[in-house]
Length: 347
Image 1 (cartoon, rainbow, N blue to C red):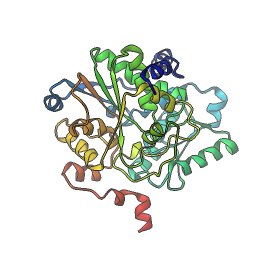
Image 2 (cartoon, rainbow, N blue to C red):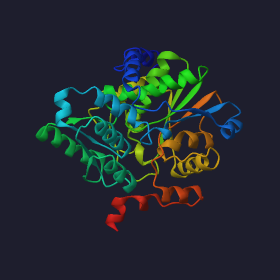
Image 3 (cartoon, rainbow, N blue to C red):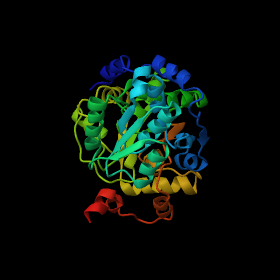
Image 4 (cartoon, one colour):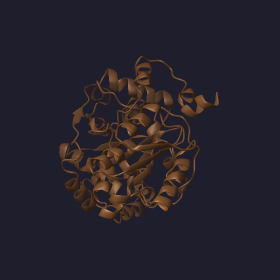
């Protein structure tokens, strides 16, 4: 598709700069305005300024709190009384549970057996009811659909929802305000809520910024969908970037369209490259990040990003099992398949 066609699509996005600005007003006092920190080590490597957007320091440990809270605050009284539900790989579930608890709303989070135990326990700790259903996000979504149909709960999807996308887009406003001469931004990509919202804000304010999505080689549904020209299913596989797992939905209404229009490139990383990103974040940046949060750093370390700068890498979350983090930070080569709870169950 030509760049002219893509720019026309970007001018008619379903989530606009006005939506994102309204979300920021709504979220005031409910989330942190996370810092943008320089990275001397990565700047020296690339020979251009590199900055890290530390969304890993958000209250629930990931960017997901922005979108989930924006969606919850927009519910009417009847929906609040019935409660909310979502399928999640962990971070969205924790964020939705936190947002719902703050408003006194019932929350049921449905997760597959691929979700790490630490993320399951974090959802429970926020006061939500956690249900483990099947071995994929698609199977967990079936339970969400049942809760909506039979119990009247409101589904708050982890990414393909205008209020969620707008909430995530508030990160883009902060990045541009803190670094007006931004040239390149690196965004983790899973279902696309983070990338779609953040890219929409940045593209509206700074049209010439290069926007690059980053995902993993193992089961990147958005990458496969963009390559096919329409949403497709992929097999969900164990990965260090577990928060980037899951499909985008064959009926995807928003994020596929937005990322097709907004991304300049989408880069995939090996598990070894993601592990190197996690270790670098810890040893050089003094930051604990999960695999999904480390993909921007990993892409820079792997030499997969050109030197057009200043560059911002968004560190999306820190909710990694600390025993696993210790192994990776120590340089241990981890058997990815053996990490999966589902794989342990099948042994």
